[in-house]
Image 1 (tube, rainbow, N blue to C red):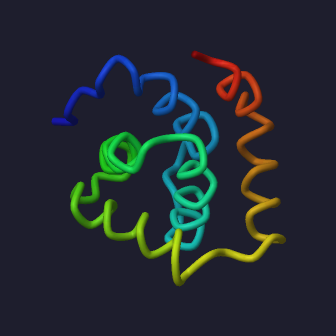
Image 2: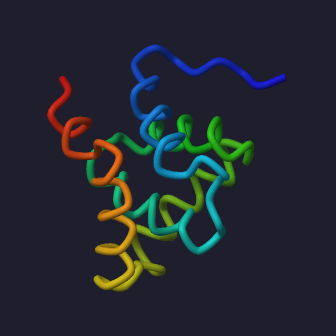
Length: 97
């Protein structure tokens, strides 16, 4: 049984579902963290990613800190995944309140 997501994170979860309908590969997971950590608080990002991936909140939270400090993805990788997000409405998601 999957937990429900907080209402304020529903559109983020939906964005992820559209972009990664079959789930995220481990390499993509870290890149998504790097992209979305610029737009969400660490707590909200950890919550939505934990919900989407089924990973433990604490593990995701530590991965966010790791990717924002020592394990930053390359510009090429960031661009590739960002294009994948843009194809499913990332730009509209950015405009939300």
